[in-house]
Each structure stands twice: as C-alpha cells, then as structure tokens.
Amino acid sequence: MSAVNGFLWTLMLLFVPMCAGFAICHWFRLPMNPPICFLGGYLGQWSLFQLFSVPMSLFKVGFVPLIWVVTLALVLLDTCGIALFMRERKLRSARRGAHRRPGWNAADVFALVILIAGYLCLAYACGRLQHVDGDDSRFVVEAVDIERTNRLFLTDYGTGQALTDFAGPLRHDLFSPWTVYLAYIARMTATPVAIVAHSVLPQVLLLCLMCAYWAVAERFFGNSRFEKYAMVFLTLLVCAYSGRSTMTAEGYFMRRSWQGKAVVAGIVIPSMYLALTNVSDHIKEWRAYLLVYMVMLAMCFMSAMGIILGTILCGAFGLAYGIRYRSLPVALKIWGGVAICLVYVGIMMLRMV
Image (cartoon, rainbow, N blue to C red; front, side, top):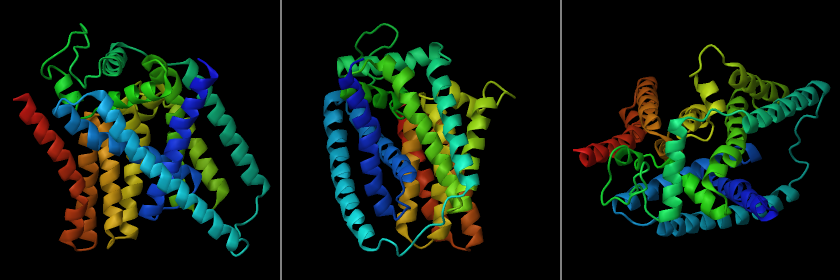
C-alpha cells in the first residue's frame, strides 16, 4: 500500500465521519466533543447507506449510482459540519475563559496513560490476531463482487455467475447490506476489499468502540476524567479477556470486528442505549426520537441480528417509558424504531415467498 492509500484512509475513515458527525451532533443538540462527533458521524453514515442501499438494491440499480448518491449526501453533511465548526470556533474564542473545566491531577493523567497503553495493545492484537472462517470469506466475496461487477447482490458468491433475481442468502443480505459499506470504502480508497475488511476497518471500528463507551461513561460521570478513562479502560479489558465463552459479544467484536453482527454487539448496542436514555432527558422533543430512528437504521444496516435486537430494545424502552410517563404517545414514538424494523422484515418476507 502506498502513501496515497494512507491519505485516502485518513480522509474517508477519519476526516469524513468527523465532519459529518459535527453536523449531526449539532442538529441533535448532542455534546460536540471529538469522541461523540466521531461516533455520530459513523452512525449517520451507516444510516444513510441503509436508507439508500435497500431500495436501490430492490430496484436493481447499480453500485456506481449508489456511490454517487451516498457520496453526495456525505459531501453535503461534511460541508455543513465544517461550516458549523468554523462558526463554533469563533464563538468559543469570543467567550474563552467564561467556562473553565477543572484542572488535571495525577490520577487523571495516570488513567489517561493507562487507557492509551491499553488501546495500543488492543490495536496491535486486532491487527495481528484475527479469526477468519467460511462465514468471513462469504461476506468478503460478496463485497468483492459488488465492487467489481457493479451489481448489488446479483452475483452468486459461490460461482461468480450473474443472477437475474436475488437468490439464497442474498435475499436477506440486501436488507442488512453491510457488505456494501466494505465495497464502498474499498472503491473510495483504491484498496482491495480483503485489506479493508481485515486490516484497515478493524482499527477504525476499535476507535468507534472506545468512542461509544466514552459516551456511556460521560453520561454516567460527566466531566470527571478519572472515572471516564477508567470505565473505558475496563471495557477494553472486558473485550480482551472475556474468556468465559468463545461467542460473547465482547470477544466476538475483538475476533471479527469488521463483521456486521460484531459491530452491532460492540458499538451499536451501547449507541442505541445512549439514544434511548437521551429520550428521557428530552421527552417532548422530536429530535430525541429521530436520533433513535437514525441509530436503528444503522443497526438494521449491520445484520439481521441488529434488526432483532433493535426491535427488542425499542420495544422494551417504549413500554417502560410509556408506563413511567403515563403517556401512550411517548411509547408510540419510541416504537417507531420497531416499525422501521417491521417494514424491512415485511418486505423481506414478501421477497422470500
């Protein structure tokens, strides 16, 4: 790989999601610190792929038009994010010194150093130690076929033959088209799909994992640095040493971090928890419910398991909030996330009849 590939990885996997995340966090009125903007940018990006990929696949539109549509949407989001960042920077410089955070102490520095060391160790392990089997190769082959043939789920991944209609597992893969994202990143960075899936993307998804649990820690501990760093570090330890089973959500993410259901387990479930608990802080604002729908679309994008778990989470939280606030409209708004899943499942069942 050349320096050009490295530049494209930085652009597409770091800069683009961060700028998009700034616009998304500003619109949803979320804290606009780097971890939350980075996570929000990826969730917004994945929800865009779900919105566009499924109908374009059903109508048998090619991969290239999908690239143009998604790229245009991301360019618009990034442009808004950069403009908002410049405006926010001017406002912050104008009120500099009005709100000062507590200073650093020895415990904060120690916790941050340990967290960085833990992250570097896991990043090294993630790059060197991976579990690869037939299931992995199937999804990689799907992404390779999409990137090379310009067909969305209309290539037999076993033989490479073109199909006239969706067959076999392709009939439900198109409703959770995570492989489209692998093909998109491969095309936009001029990198082979296998390298994107097994070498490049896992490193970025590990950062997303840290950002997701950083956001959870910030909800629990606010601006207390030591507690936040310690919680994220303990989460990394759980991911690394969850040896009670080979198929725990944490261990699954470490071994197959690039695979859709692993991203659901490690990143999107804590993100959905954050979106749903954010509703309780803004129970009367539609933006809070729209945030839940955005995360739900990202969850559906990853895997059919994401559709199932998203339905359970929204269903349970909707019932709990409906009882807590004695409000059927609140429950129905949260159950809008369930409706999204049911729409995809309904169309999927019709396609499979």
